[in-house]
Length: 316
Image (cartoon, rainbow, N blue to C red; front, side, top):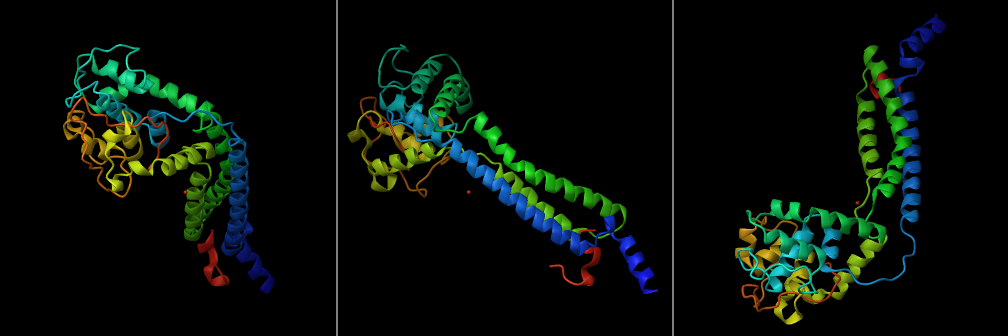
């Protein structure tokens, strides 16, 4: 009689394994898969961060690209305004010439050409006009070891394979449990947690170690441009406006020249840093003669079911 009861109970379990037993096994296997995934991730990151040789400092637009994809355009706009190439409406006051003003970096020069053509001034048109040069700059920074590229991203995606296998096992158990009318609530919770970890373990950072160290070095070396210090950008040469925008985003542009930021339809405060502090200083980019930028090339401002009572609720 006892033997028959045990046999009948085992027959009602999904795959002949009780819910608590399967859930314990599944959690252990999941933890192993997470450990393996992060070990692979660490190996990939080490391979993509060799000891790079020293090289020239980054330009303001290059530094801005380390932060996000839109900021180089804002830095280029500030660079043009700081050199007096455009006015507060965003329109050039000098005819475009590809070799004029050697201090301009490629994005600022391309933006100058874009603004010299008829059309409405807005972020969309500027992003489209500079898209090609931004993409080339991104590839250059990737080749020089500052940004993650497609090969590194593909390598990082392999870190998810062990977790994919565990999730597939859980999915099969889930389908079987539902088909046999067993409760699978705890299994669903564990699978959701594993799904989140799967996304995180294979997520590629924007910057390599070289990129992070460069950004940190720029922050340290350019503290005088922090908005909290109320810097007079005109005193730092013709590159400090671009550098400040690269560090603190559109908030700086609105402070330096609100008319220009409004004409270009720049989102107020977008991408700003530095705790929302104002970039206000006595200097303004309002006159073409004033210098609002610095020749400095780097910047930065500024991831139990216990007992038989749990039954199939643990995992079918």
